[in-house]
Image 1 (spheres, rainbow, N blue to C red):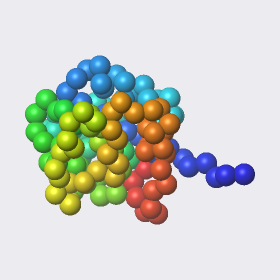
Image 2: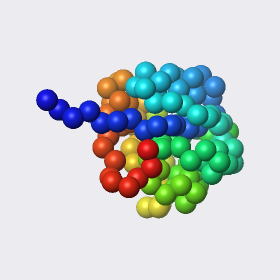
Image 3: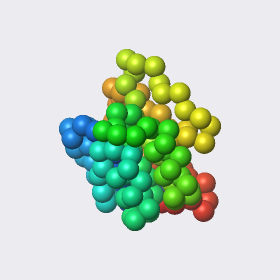
Length: 130
C-alpha cells in the first residue's frame, strides 16, 4: 500500500488569460487543492502571497505585467518554502531564469492531467509551506 501525499492546503493561480486561470483553478480543485485567490500579473500576485501565504503558486508564463522570474523570486522571499509550478508553452523556448528565480516544476503545455497531478502532489521537504 502506497502512502498518499497530502495536497497543499491552499493555492494561488496567476495568469494573464482568464481562460487559463479557469483551467488551472479547475485542475487544482480536481486534485482537492483549495484555490484561495487569483491574479493576472506580478504585482497583485505578490500582494496575495504576502497576505494569504498559500502553500503553492501555479502560474502561467504569460502575465499581464511583471516578469515570471520576478514573481518566483518575490513570492519565495515573501513566503519561504512556497512551492511554485510554472506552466510554459512547449512551442516557445522556456524563460531564462536566474537560480533564485527557478520554479520547483516547469510544466510544458499542453500537458496531461497526470503530469499536473504529479507536479502538484509531489512530496515536499519537511518544514515547507503547504
